[in-house]
Structure formats: structure tokens, C-alpha cells
Length: 234
Image (cartoon, rainbow, N blue to C red; front, side):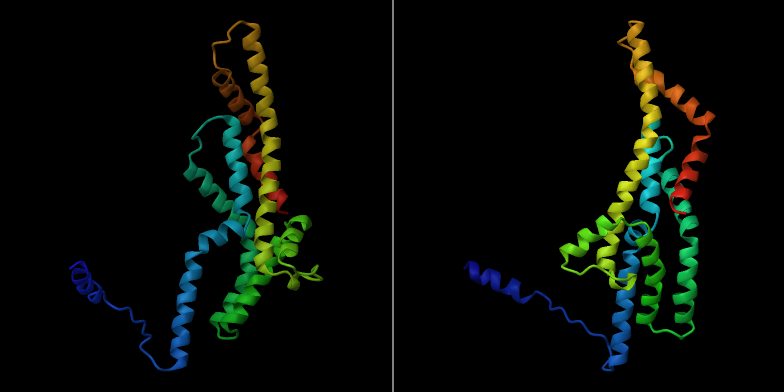
């Protein structure tokens, strides 16, 4: 009885038929290429984060906010927006080179899609290789069983991108440590003063906050932070 109830439901399941509406290989290939382009566009945020200066910038700016102990000030939208525009500013020469060597010739019909992608990867690989530690790159090259590269062409993006990402994380945390030091000194001084005055019930963080902001404003902190970030990529 149960089988008789299940079988009609199974037979009513619709089938799935994928049709490219063309019997010509050229049209089918174009459709597949379009699907690949849409896939790449969906991965654009990840590409922006992992292949540019965005990672280092946004982490350093987050460390500044945590060091100041201002919680949500500046808000996330401001930090991410500033990080994006700084990324576009730093990456402008690389993007211009990609446009000149790959995008414009491709749109003019001088390069195929594969050739354009290869040309576009060259400036990006040069930028990432410049800011990637040899130790980090050797980790992924060795894990994949690859030989020591003799030139940039011998380094695949599958190894260079994660090596660049962890190098950026390490650099960002090193800068973050240097940012935290003066704020930590202020916290320790304020805590010592409060303890010497017997005001142990008063939160040192709340008292130290205006002094942190005052110090940050007096030394023109945002200018120094942005200047340091720009110099770190020069």
C-alpha cells in the first residue's frame, strides 16, 4: 500500500534538460564563456580582497579603532569605504597597466580572451610577488610539490594568491602592534594613577578614552596612519 502511494509521486518528478539552443560549437563555446565571465564577476569581491592592498588597509584601520577603544566609531561603513578608496589609489598604476596591456587590446579584437587573461595576470602577479615573503611562497610551492621558481612566470596564481594573503595578514598585524603600543601606555598610566588615588572602582578605559583621542588628534593620527600605509606599498 505504501509503495503504491510513493510510486506516483516519484513518477511526477520533472526532468532537467540543459539545452544551449544551438548545434554549432562556436555558439555553445560563447555561451560557456559567458557563464565563466559571470562566475568571475561573482568572485570579484574575493579577488578585490585577496589580490590587492585592501586586506592590509582594512585590518590596520580596524586596529586603530580598537586601540582607541571607541567601539563603533568610526563605523564599519566609513572604514571599509576609506579602505576601498585607498586600495583604488594604491592599485591605480597596476589597474592602468592591466587596462593598457589586456583590456583595451581585447576590446579592440587584438587579443583573445585567454591571451587577455594572461596579460592581465602579469601586473597583478608582479604586485603580489613584490609584497609576498619568500617563506610564505615556499610553503605553498613545497606543499604542491613544485620546484623552486626561476622567474615570475614559474609561479602559479594558485600558490601566489594565498602566499600573498598570509603575508599581508602578517604585515597588517605587525603594523597593528605598533599602533597599540602608545594606547597601551596611556591605559597603564591611567590605571596606575587611579590605583594610587584609591579609585579602583572607576573603569580605567573610560578615563583613558579622552586622553587617547586627544593624543591621536594632536599628532594628526589619521594622516600618519594613511601615510604609513601608502609608504608600506611604495
